[in-house]
Image (cartoon, rainbow, N blue to C red):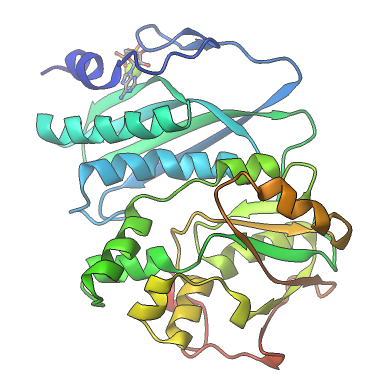
Length: 321
Ligand code: ADP
Ligand code: MG
């Protein structure tokens, strides 16, 4: 199989044909049509085998994750996804692998009505780059900046699951079959919070997706918005599976520091708080208030039931890779 045949056979599927794609795969450029009144949100992420996912990760999970992490960035700015391109570097032509990879890719594409409009296919160490494009009405994009002291801090879903999942697949932790299935699934098949993201337009004062752990990503909001934050550790949303797999202190540490959850972290002023529940009602995900912003620029303060909280391992470095 040559490059051309791989593209034709695995990637040039006609399943998802959007009206705003004038020319998709097959020419020198894709040509797309921008809707009036919308800004274009663009994001790129590269996943390298052995760096961003374990080498033995199933092909379907790699494809899902490669697209999901880019869609998660679109969610974080409140954009509605539209198109993406895929650059893939393959060490060999393995048809079974490519079939599983492309099936999973197109399944997620169809779910979110996003169309693969182009890319590049080369030989080399396994690496996948997805560039995703989405729309957001002019001046409504959610940014890391814009939060104010007093704003409430929220996260979607549950935290720390993917980090525990990674420790399970890499043999550092064991858990019951049921728990480990759930946690490894959270690692391999993250759910980009796209409906939550678009619902938060005009409501959230700032937003980011959690890719590097709550503490790290909250620090980006604090820096961009020139605020500090008080976080109530006991409020961190934990799945039943994480609570079964590790003890409470460990679960809090994963929730604060482990990456790959792809939940949204956002802030809302007290005045807009009332609108939040209605806005999120159809987004298929819960949101939990975990604290409040302060005027202490860049300072993150952790509390457990009103008492200052110290991390067991003394810091966030433990999980940073
Ligand atoms: P060129 O040499 O003009 O860059 P290529 O031969 O690299 O073109 O690609 C041919 C067509 O296939 C282009 O439309 C390109 O966008 C598309 N393409 C290449 N690789 C992929 C891929 N992995 N997924 C989707 N489209 C791809
Ligand atoms: Mg090319």
